[in-house]
Length: 245
Length: 235
Image (cartoon, rainbow over all chains, first blue to last red; front, side):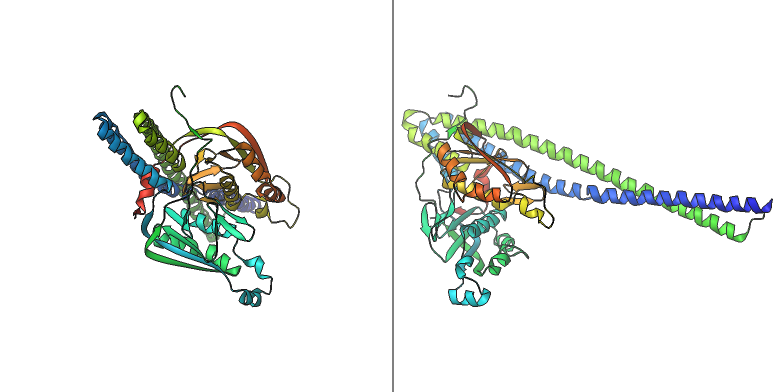
């Protein structure tokens, strides 16, 4: 009788062991679940979003207070009203890019590599590696992403309707032909603007690989001129909430 | 049956293992609970803030309209027109008008072996090029998934979404609306060798429709202040 009971004893140990294994297995699954759902990362991302929203809210609140003050002023007679509207116009003009802006920022200079050098460098036809409108489009996008508030290319201020495109061998900005070197000026936090472009694996690295010379210089002061092209709004009409004239 | 020493050792080890397993299981489920709870709390706060901003923005839009109306008297006609025109450019004014709608979404063709899937999804540059082409064709106002494009709009890839205007996440499919001359906008996108043809090469699905009227909302945050933060008026 001693033998079988010893066997069942060992078997029960094996069963306990398997159950433990299962439990441990479950535990591993849980770890995987944590990773897949990225649960620990979410509160962090949300906290960052909340901080941004708070800033947006404060800015909007300040704008609301400013508008409230202006509406009060409008009640106080024609002259005051005119003053309030003039001030509002200045603000909108500034936001639209119709006024020059100065401040800290960066200057980016882009240039094609001298032809002979480029041929040696890559062993290809140099025209393949000259600066394309897309390259400038990308640099500008990166600067805006890093918080630039105003940008000009060869003194052409970029506003919402500004295009950057090829026309033959030239690049056109605001319907005007610009020629290399392309000097891009951006007002914003110089450190952020610079690191946005120069980040490892970033745009500056990629452009240099294509044989484009690019220099990014932080500046204590850059001056970005006002947009001086024509403005014509023919198709867009303001939407008025009630009635809708 | 005699209980031998090794039986006791096995039992002890099993118990310890059992306790350890139970503890770990418990602690990992606690982590999940704590995180889910924290995430939920944060998400609630974020939603509440968004709602507050939306409500405030409605107030701001109303006040902007009142200000415009205040300038409707004949002697202020010029001022009123400028306020509207510059407001449309700045993005502070909601607008409607004729134009186009561009629908963009990732390729749905199955990949052949060896093809790099990243070639066949939309990139930020693709959207930048569409916007650039619309601007060149005279678009007066543009929005992507109803997020207004302004002078300082940036577009970045963020995995399956794109991030527009610094932190606004938009998911595919992307609908770009633009106000302008519908034929001019349409033709410049569909031009031979143009941006639509380039995108179709990568099997990205693009369709462009002319529209009698599209509505483009105003920029949902404060541009007037944002624009001022980084610089000052010069000259």
